[in-house]
Image 1 (cartoon, rainbow over the protein chains, first blue to last red):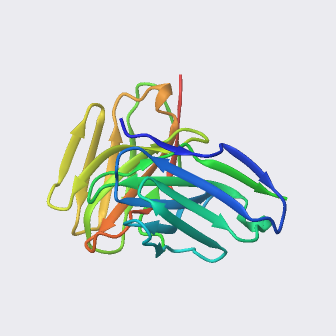
Image 2 (tube, chains in turn purple, cyan):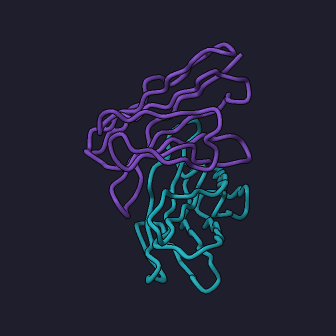
Length: 111
Length: 111
């Protein structure tokens, strides 16, 4: 079974803090994705990566950056957290042209 | 940008009834996928239908795809209380880019 893990289920941070969300997968998938999910807005793609050290902007990259130093790990970074980044963050992986596998999500609250 | 739009936004039915959800999308696709999300959790892949397929079955799930109308439907037969969840359609464009998700349909099945 594919396993996608995220470093925290719940996280509370203060405005202005630098926040790291980690995602690790064990299936050697090339592609990894970060989404945020908000009520009424569904899932919106923040960034994705199709290879180590490669990254592509999604629909809402502003205020975020990513890092992929190893194939199995994809990190989402909030350089200076703001209250409007309070959300559920979902990591996903997949190989080409098949389904995506999701982690359990991190619910981030920025106060 | 949101590619898929599910309809209805919310659906409440009794156990044993069938549930039908619809998804419309805007551009040409390679495939369309349906995912399920239990409250506060990650998404789980249900079924994938390719652009050259018209109908697909998996257990109590039946998916149809009409590429001329750019729409798909998900039918869950003989619903159970355990089917209570949010359901999302997702499309993969012909360029093979990241999946784009709709806003989801929230299904509530009461016993």
